Length: 353
Ligand code: GDP
Image 1 (cartoon, rainbow, N blue to C red):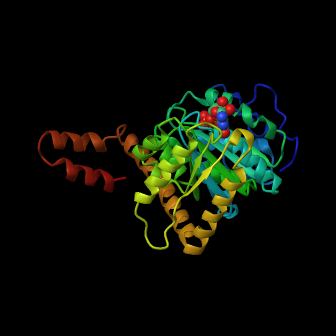
Image 2: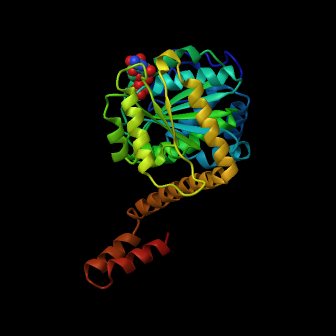
Image 3: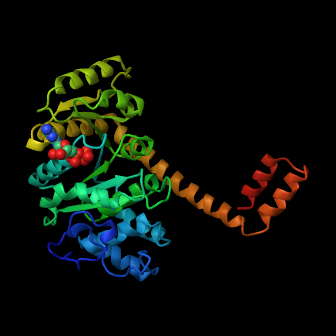
């Protein structure tokens, strides 16, 4: 990745800009903020530049993903040969638990180990939180001049369920740009966050003392997706109790022989304490994934979800466009008149797609 190439005009890509050069979009957006983008050579060139580590091209590609641009199939095809190697680590947990502080420290440690790092901060719950995330990511500012780090936030921009489909594509862009490790941070503990975090090879669930997180985690189904629990704010009273709660819950859970037992790590990210232990737990999980064959399984599951999401999106769009034609109207009038039942009509509709 080339250093310094991404100095932007202060207004470029502000909407999705997080903390610096890596995420600034290039020119070429129209007034509505949607990238103006033609097929063919443009895509090939953009992908080639992203592969060279040009941060503006990476940012543009992620914007295409975020906006569901029609050029995406081409982008995906161009990126495909360069993907599948990066380690993807998901982080989730309640707001305020210390995700961005922890991410920042993980980035620091990974950089010290010579790894290239991508960070995707994803907010599935609100279309309007790009700014909020931006505020939070100020902590990551120290990494914004580092050419080996890309930091980018994505919000749903009002498209429900869009991020679960878009996140894997954004991961592919970062992989294509040469990131060895990609940290995908989500901002809550709801179902959408769980879905996104579980797209990772390894999922970290962060907890903190005194936030009732153990109970919340159990409720939101987070216990099932956690490969590593990080009890952050270990400098605060109550951290030991939270640690014991989680260990207790894990002891109750059933595991298949040879299955992974989630690790529980104490950390005080604000002081950088426990970060090496978190990385060690991630590595241990990764070794288990590889040795047990689960890495391949997980990735295939992730790919299946990705393909399904794309197919569903395509189907929805086609069914939606039927409303403008006569096929649906004709079937609807037959159903309303009792000539055919709605299941038969739906079958016919699908056959005609
Ligand atoms: P996020 O919302 O989960 O991303 O949480 P942040 O990383 O923004 O942290 C929320 C607040 O908790 C900030 O004020 C941090 O300084 C603080 N914080 C983060 N880690 C620690 C920690 O290990 N100990 C203490 N005492 N505070 C922390």
